[in-house]
Figure 1: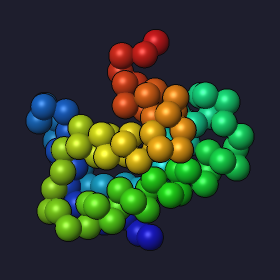
Figure 2: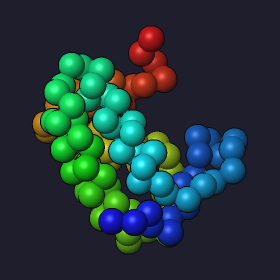
Figure 3: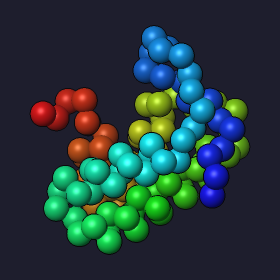
Figure 4: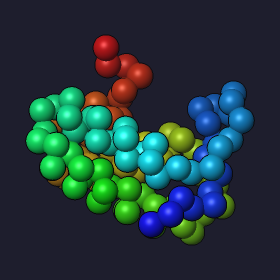
Amino acid sequence: MSDALIDIIKREGRRPSERFERSKLHASVYAACLSVQAPQGEAQRLADMICDIVAAWCATKPEVTSADLRRMAARHLEAFQPEAAYLYKHHKLVL
């Protein structure tokens, strides 16, 4: 699935919006899974699946906030890898 033509409104509007990039979402979900010691194959599979779900959700919207994107990805990741979902959702708060 290619990158959708959706604008992502950055945190609190302080930075310019940018186009949705599946590769950025994939990399962040993949990294969260690896951070909790998920095997690489599982991390890859989950990142692919979460990207598909989020891209489908975004497809009906002209723009979404980065916070909404993060919440949606974390919500779906939680069903499969709760610890990774927590890290993903709270990445700015976890050292």
